[in-house]
Image (cartoon, rainbow, N blue to C red; front, side, top):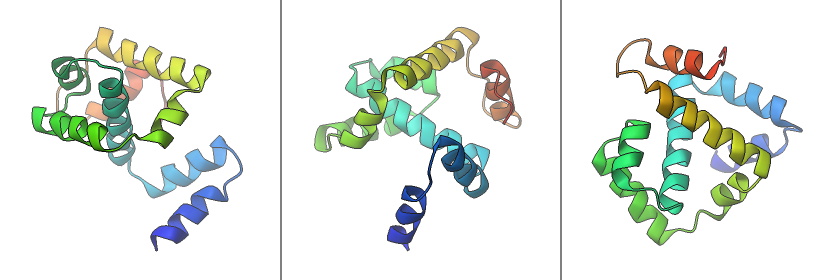
Length: 123
């Protein structure tokens, strides 16, 4: 089943198809949680302090610690490779900066709608 899932993603031709596939398959919260995982890994690999990662991404200290331990065991070559694309990397850090300046909305109902509004995204 896992291989079939991977093959389906690999067969998609462009980012628009991948976005559509993931939007159909994942809830907005699941997409945000995957993005937060990637952000935590990239921030920790970049040497950003735990407290900044915790505060920025609104993650628990135990979650950040878990990802930090994972970055010591795994090299995350595929996540790192994706982040090296200059244009995409800049967009990621620009959006993260926007969220930092605006402040992540508190937990609760409507939080992700507010995040999308801050980023100017109509998802």
